[in-house]
Length: 387
Image (cartoon, rainbow, N blue to C red):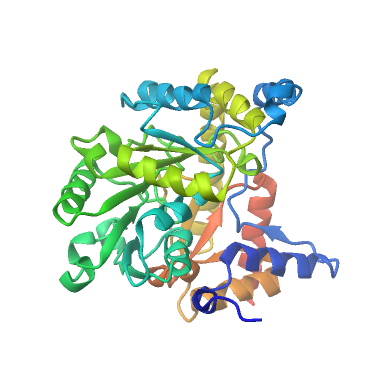
C-alpha cells in the first residue's frame, strides 16, 4: 500500500509532536508544565455553554446543517464585523462558516492552488500555511521576516519567477507566534501587491480580540479595495475560549468565499447547528468576558517578561496574542534549547524553527497557563540554565 507522495514531504505536525513528548514524560510520573500549545486554561464563558445546552436539545439541530452555515450564523458574523470594524458584508455571499479557521486555511488552498503552484507564506507563521500547499502538491515560498522590520513579512522581495507561479499570499497580524502587529500602511501595500500580481490575499486574524496596553487590532477589510483581493479568517477559539468547539468564519471577496464554499460542500457537511447557535450568543452578547481575558493575559505576559528578564533572557513585550516570543541564549538552536528545557526542567516550550525558517533562534511561550505555573516554569528554566 503506497500513500500519496505529498505525505512524504509533510513534516510531522508540530503540536502533535509536543503532545507526544508531554505524554511520554507524564506516563513516567514526571510533573510537566506545558507552555507549548495555545489552548486556553479558562473554560468557555458560562452564558455560551448555557446557550449550547439549550441548542443541543432542539431536534432541528440533530439534522444536517446548512453547508455554508445557517443564515442566522452568517448574519451574526456580518453583524459582528460591522460593530467591531465598521466593515459591511453580505451574509449570503461574503460570509462562510468554518469548522475552525485551520480548516479554512487548508481548504482555501484546495480551491485556488494547482500542483506545482506557489503559495507565499510568512517565514515565521502558522504551519498550516505551508502544510496546506504541500497537500496540494504545491510549493511554498517563505517571505522573510526580521526582528528589525517588526516581523512584517517582506512580500516585496519575492522573486519574479516565483510570483509568476503564485496563487495565494498569507499574512496574519497580530502574528502567531511572534506577537507582531501590522500598520494600516502595511495592509495597504499588501493589497496593492496582490492586485498587481493577481494573488488572493488571505489574512489570518485569529487573535484580533486579544490586545494589550490599549492596542486594538484592525481588520484588513477596513482598508480601501481590500475586498477586491482579500478574505479574512476569524476564529472564536481564543477570543471566547472555544478551541474545542471548532467554529470560525471566513469573510470578504465573494469569488473566494464561493470557491471555498464549493470545496467545503464536497468535503464536509457543515458545522453542528447547536455550536453555531452558541457562537451567535458569543458574538451578540456582552463582550465583557473578552475584556476580562485581555486583562488576564496582560498580567500573565508581564509576569513572564519580568521573570525572564530577571534571569537574563531577552524578549519584547507583545501588544497582542497569547504568546511571548523569546530569543534563546547563545550556543543553542531552537530545537536543542527546547529539548534541554523539556528533559531537564520538564517544561514544554515551542521551538521557533517549527514555525518556519526565520523562527530559528527563538522559542514561543504560551500564556494559557495559571500564574503560579508560569512562574514555576521560569524558575525551573533558571535552575536548568544555572547548571
